[in-house]
Image (cartoon, rainbow, N blue to C red):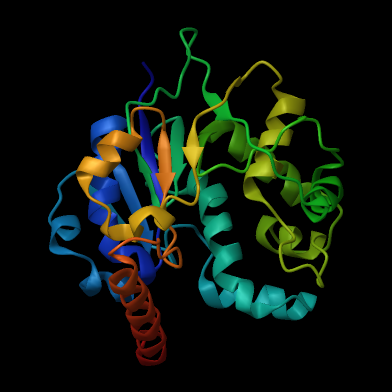
Length: 293
């Protein structure tokens, strides 16, 4: 089986949940390494179990990829007339793409995994012929494909969506895609600026790293990926929020592969008040911290 690393871009709101995510990723995915990408100035707020884990590498989102940082992305969006409150949303997408160029990318494959998602049972990411899997989803946002057409002169090739809670990227395919984007006729000095300038400024959700990469590979390397469906539960937080017990997660794992626990999903049981207050407290602390750093 091919070796791969897992990368988990994370914001402060997910820090308390990270130990659980790391624990489950280790148990059910078993990567070579786990790379957590954060604003390094917030590293002191990471739980000790993460900071002291020898199999976890914590890297700075503002230096892990050359010429990519929060302020730079914000300035690109501002010049393009796009809403700058989406800076973090664009940055985490660019980190997933640009990680292929990083010194930390020491395997041919790397798996991007959402910081609010738990694998609930063993998941294989390569078939018997060692083709990596992509997970089919149902979603469509036309703005994503407008950008795809402008950047790579490609249409939507897949009859499904690539937007899942994870994506197995191949380093060489990613480098090839970024090289093509860098050479396209969209204005900009690099692939970051060209992607921003290829989007519709008035669209809040105007680019998808997963749809772009997935359709690029389907066109350029049609035999690279194997396609599959997983049983995923995006709104698992409504059960008991992030306070859900391992016992309940074990029951969910009988017929689910992954479960996502968004901070704003409060559930409907006895833990709802606690979960609601916890989410409000985290959001309040996040605002204060942003003013201090």
